[in-house]
Image 1 (cartoon, rainbow, N blue to C red):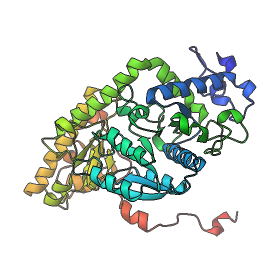
Image 2: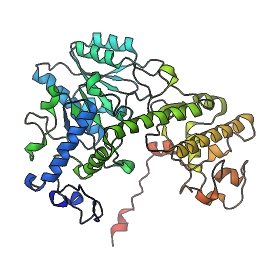
Image 3: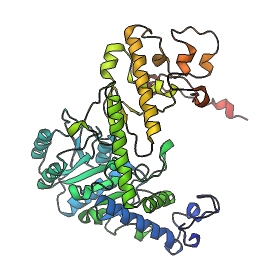
Image 4: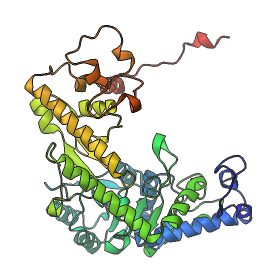
Length: 452
């Protein structure tokens, strides 16, 4: 009930508003005044531990990157407690998220990169060689499962066993947990520690830079080295590594979203969401495969929760770049998928479980229409330096005045499948973002502007 600080019943008060206790409880409120919230926190920790197959969860980290740091500090604390101060080498596949390496360095570790095989999986032979070379110094292997290349690592259990045999720990990056929930548990196939992104897999929105929650989940032998807090003993173990975030339970104000999501979905609902996420990615991959190469696939030609569309052959043949395709998607009413990561010149498409078949088809039809536009550039029907792709996106202001392009106004702003009734109009045209990144211009007003 509201009096306990946990909203368990339908309520007429706006969630998070000035009268809602969930949105008003102070992070450092005395524990005896926040028993409802503490109950919510414990229940969420227990459910996340069950979902991942780990033994203990800390909700303190505010982001996936903080969860990585917390997990690696737990690994370092474990090795130090065992007298293995020399174990500082962190093996990271070349396909990993960039935060993996940054977190390892912040945790005082030395990064050693492991090669990627041609099918997108870890190069097992290179991994074995790196383990043998650094056997006495090996602290941890960080892997993302399924991988950032959008494939399930077929040999993940064997990979984990090799690291354990060498005395190391296995960190399974949980950024792609939305391909696992209800189907597999990292703590059961060899992981010792993972972070989760509640602002992705467990329903908390993460647009605009936050807020986020990146809990860290560990097996029992790493639990003594989870984050704690000097002002709140209940926030972590006495032997913990110290605070990762300023508040004892991080972004506690948004935890009720994930708590309610797990309660409402239930085990079968969470599993169904995972299945839909994987199915959606494979649906897109199969629809687009006749038009664009899919860079990596696993056994049976299937992907995991995302697929990478390779535009590099088209760029080489026509000059149309991945930037052109990404900007042209705006004219079709779409924010572009992840561009040039983890492979430069590609689009990584991850539909998640949230889009229905109508929206998936709308996106696929837009990509197919763009492929036809690329063909018009290739055939010479449109000049390489003056076509809807190269000039995208097109604003309403761009239509005014004299039109001197090799294509019509209609082709610019109402491409195939886009109607005037529901047209999205971008507010600005394309900028040279690479130039801007390298040539910063101060837009601060001059000092004399402050005289008054």
